Image (cartoon, rainbow, N blue to C red; front, side, top):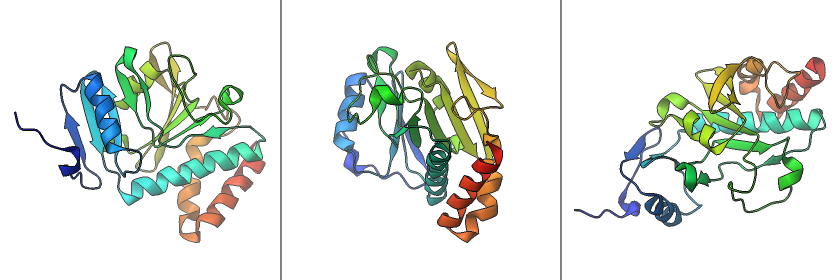
Length: 214
């Protein structure tokens, strides 16, 4: 067997590496070796480990949708916590991943100001955002389901789909549980209409849209 150090692996932007037969202990060791300061994202599903490097386009929409969630929440006067691409994992479920962004709303008061989590005791994020699912090797929805995340927004190719957890699987939905009064699926069109005007103009447009829609 040839041993390869993780630092020798170079995953090009927009590509992913899939490792098989990775034990939970090995997954934890890989997380420790990769550290927090890295450009890659990981997902783990019953022995399969994906390491993915995002493209600039991916990061743009990750940040833009994350900003939109924050701006919407502030306009609606909703308390929230944002935890970005935190690594969420549950050994008993053999599941772990790093969303493109994630937020607490319904359970915000339970985690306010928290810096560490244990999903065997703490609630998972109420909302997670995933960008460009088609570029990822592992199907993330079953992983999210085993972690218990109630709502997922998936942005891909200018379309924003919402999935709500019902039992042990997700069903596509027309309305968000977090923002039930807004047509969240129209956000990509709003973003595209203001993208060339700069981030401040875009964020102002989102806030105006909320005031006119809510």
